[in-house]
Image (cartoon, rainbow, N blue to C red):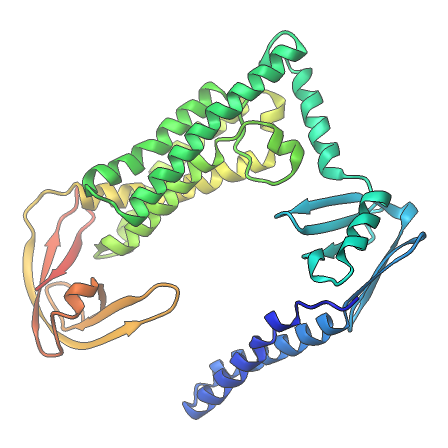
Length: 379
């Protein structure tokens, strides 16, 4: 049973060889090391996947690779779970043994036989976790007085949370992709997570902040998407749209907001039932939100809602360059202006192509609503 996923990984050694060649020519030795590492990774993946086979029998299952092999006997298998539809993990009873992971079983030529063997010989751990979760809810009086009433309330709450999650995704898309009108978009992105936080407080006994795929956790209604996605869009707006004179100016405001939000979340979660307090994913989501929101909100409010007149300086364009990758940025190296030494500054694409080396641009320095000075470049 030969794995046919090989061709997807072979490009690593080609890219590594090209990177190594160009870096040696440019005497960039650190790039050479990265290129060599990519070549080694490509060779490893090629050999491992070329030799990869799954052997099934009445006694158990074995995965054979070029560098290692792993086997589990039928009696030693606890069961299997899935992720993203096709990633199957066969888990042992004894946690000291290693699980067998099939990243995508459909890439094996006999994948139907493999799947049939797994279904026939291994317990579905996802279904087991889902069953346990439903039984917990049927015995939880937070959802109602009878089993039927509790399941009906669970269905209503999941629908309620799904509306909030869809709205959170829409706010994220609005702020990240097309923030027009800008003030209203940013204000919505800042206020929306606080609304979700209040809803989570009011429903803290029956709603979680889970983001995991585990079926038992997925049984419970979750507001994770509604709470977490908008702050990620705010983070993008913070770095793309505004430039603080000194990023350290934001530390005090960020620390204050993080402490306040952190204390609020501790109070909310600790006042909930044991189920919510013991949920590690809910704690992790709360911490992620506090860090993201605490850093981005004060900077956006400080800059976007600063209506003071700017102090204008002039600077000369010393150099231009475009940095490409996952994000394309347009950089101008400006001469010393006001309190700022000569350094590279990211500008918009339109401004970048309006100027050339030697031109004069205007630096608009503003005090900031929270006394965190910031600036923007104009022609």
